[in-house]
Amino acid sequence: MKRKVIAGNWKMNMLPNETIKFIEELTPMVKDTENEVILCVPYIDLFYALLNAQGTNIKIGAQNMHYEESGAYTGEISGKMLKSIGVEYVIIGHSERRQYFAETDETVNKKIKTALANELKPIVCVGETLSQREAGKAEKIITKQTELALEGLTEKQVKELIIAYEPIWAIGTGKTATKEDANEAIKAIRNKIAKIYGQTVADGVIIQYGGSVKSSNAKELFEMSDIDGGLVGGASLKPEEFSKIVNYNK
Ligand code: PGA
Image (cartoon, rainbow, N blue to C red; front, side, top):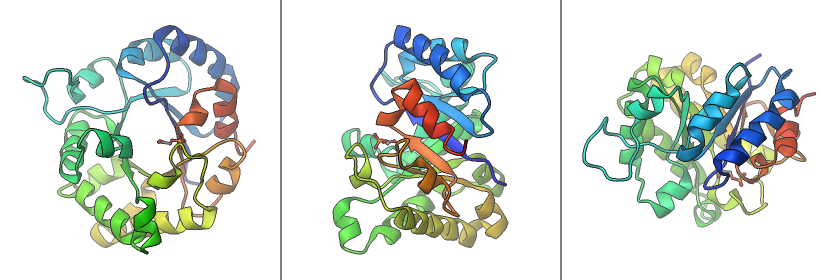
């Protein structure tokens, strides 16, 4: 069976001392899972997270990066910098970055390319707004976002990345997409990838669902045919709650 990948997205939460404590507590709770466990933490916590996750099955990711390798970009962090300290994953194009920090499909595409060039695995976020869904345009929007995100990538590169389908109206709102709607949306993304790269590549790509995932709904979502795990925001801030999501199949 294909592996399930469960990633926490801490957003702008958690201090270094809280990071150390969190990983100490989470480690024994998730050590026996066959699912992949990732924590995407703020830049300032990365080093502590990496040190404390050493020798565990917890992998560490960042939440953003710049698409240039270096240069006059005050306040930014490059993929090369992330790689240099041992980061493995990086979230790219989260809807909050698209909404508040002028992230576009074009910058998302550039960032994916730079991330892959630095051997980082991108977790690429796509998702529609509520009005787009209500207008019946969800599928069109998310497949277009996917197409633009992947533009110019080789088959080999596409195999390296993770896509997270996150309907914007479900993020941090407590509203989860129904398991059927989430599965349909993810199928549409997979079909788009199949059209460009072929069915085998598409079947191999990990596509997560994100948006108010919690321990009470993880199982029903992750058991759907096309949902390969989740990107978890709020519910990833407590070790016990997050561990229950990771261990949804225990
Ligand atoms: P949420 O966030 O789980 O708090 O809805 C998910 C995300 O934004 O990645």
